[in-house]
Length: 167
Picture 1 (spheres, rainbow, N blue to C red):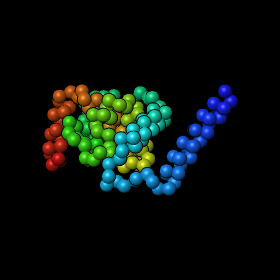
Picture 2 (tube, rainbow, N blue to C red; picture 1 turned 90 degrees about the vertical axis):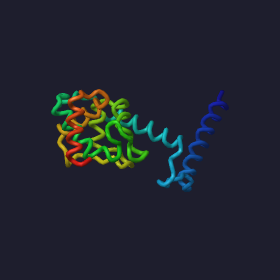
Picture 3 (cartoon, rainbow, N blue to C red; picture 1 turned 180 degrees about the horizontal axis):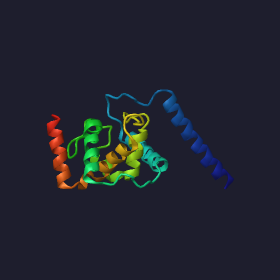
Picture 4 (spheres, rainbow, N blue to C red; picture 1 turned 30 degrees about the vertical axis):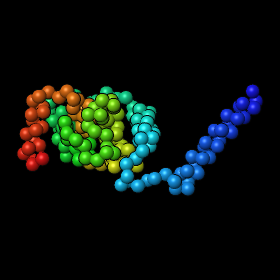
């Protein structure tokens, strides 16, 4: 039994040393002009989701999902988020940013607020602690969370605002 346990520890040490050497010797491809491997995407996605679940407190939004707040959040999304995450019902621009419909289903409203406020390190998702108030970020989070089930008149209002802005 002692030999088995030593064998397990030795195997784990060899794997850890091999992973460290792989990274330290620069064998990991970090070029952004080549797509990431499926394994890399899976590892990063798992780590990001786990960190958000652990770090974001589950809070109730102080901003109710009224039509005015949903429209405010929708306008913020179009102005600040759509260029990377894609327009509502449209395609995203780039493969790194999580699409709008995925954000709405994979995260709670509180987690969306947390990501909008604090950003995601090593990505193009910036922290927003200077430009928008917490109330505005909660409106944005409310819009994103409800984007798949917005009332038609809210969709119409956002479409009019987007058309008048030339988008």
